[in-house]
Amino acid sequence: MITISATREEEGEPRVALTPETSKKFRSIGARVFFEAGAGERSFFPDALFKEAGAIAVASATEALAEADIVLKVGRPSAQELAALKPGMVLAGMLDPFGPREGLQSLAETGVSAFTMEFMPRITRAQSMDVLSSQSNLAGYKAVVDAAAHFARAFPMMMTAAGTVPAARVFVMGAGVAGLQAVATARRLGAVVSATDVRPAAKEQVQSLGAKFVAVEDEEFKQAEAAGGYAKEMSPEYQKKQAELVASHIAGQDIVITTALIPGRPAPKLVTRAMVETMKPGSIIVDLAAERGGNVEGTKPGEVTQHGGVTIMGFTNMAGRIPGNASSLYARNLYAFIEPMVDRKENNLAIKWDDEIIAGTLIAKDGQIVHPRLKGSSA
Ligand code: NAD
Image 1 (cartoon, rainbow, N blue to C red):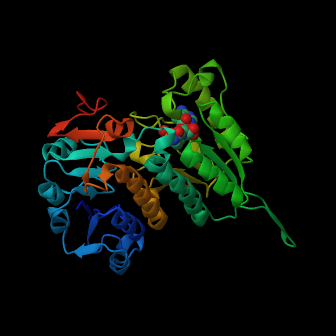
Image 2: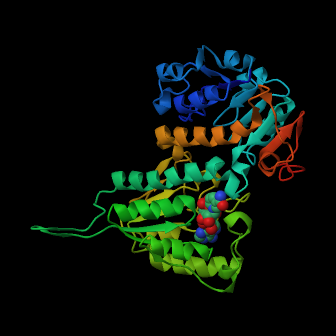
Image 3: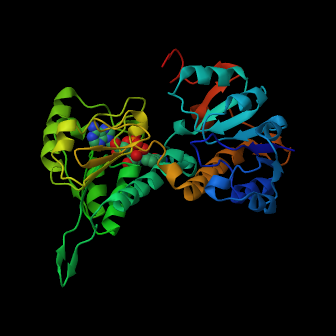
């Protein structure tokens, strides 16, 4: 019988890779499911619900991993968990493939077959496994809600007997999955919303959500979309023109949500300190790119800081701030990924190593780092 195990994540990670719902699904395909007691607590999935779904509670991560064929994680395993991993086990998680290399090396040396969900190919068949989309969508929503909660004014326009309350102005930089959800959420709250991106496809998407599109639309912009819908790094000339446009636009904004990323690169710096200083006191910036260095000059990853009356929120795990939904969607992404690996008739693992989804996400196998994007890299 295939054994699937999930453990409690480290302190700063409230999400969990297995939920009662996916425990039940794994049971229905003939697997045995172990979870470390308390693993779902911070996502509000108590042990009792896992047990009801047929999962077996164990007291420690080591015990949970002892007989595992497949290990489900949100982030990288802890040192204690690494010691319990055995060659040939399957490990699936968001393993931060461009993060500290030594950790990745230690993980490879355990001999597990490690799959990192961030590398999921953006093909139709893999949409249900796309963790970047499921988590970014929630992060975009939560960024706006956090900004609204902290803002000393209202989002919608209100006409009252005491006079009119003006609508808040929200500017979203980067209109990918997180950015578009931020646009939609800010619109629902009644703000006047604008957004920018370097990819031409984003223009119509922004406009269809009722927001204004603001961008330098030159020849380079028309070529900016790379494979998989991602942005390319823009030339210094483009960046200069973009900075001029942003500088004039940002001064009139109450809330700025930045989400701009380029795969495998540090986040582009889009908002300078001087631009922040043009914003009115009480304005709020939420820098969703904080984890990758930030889009805003002065963002402190993991911290909320003040600069001349402007609040800069640099939360590094925004999806983790809405852990109930984030865990549910992430666990479903993992189930969709793992389910085809299980041969129900034979009750064993049947991994199609040459499948695009498997090959695209496999980063370590038989003691080696194997992914082409990571080979020879010392980052
Ligand atoms: P991302 O997180 O890598 O980047 C966020 C956004 O930042 C992107 O829209 C990018 O164009 C933008 N950006 C980069 N540099 C910028 C700059 N200098 N100024 C302004 N914006 C900048 O991207 P993402 O959110 O993961 O998705 C990008 C696109 O991929 C989506 O909009 C969608 O079209 C596509 N996508 C496809 C699939 C699929 O096919 N399965 C799934 C999800 C997303």
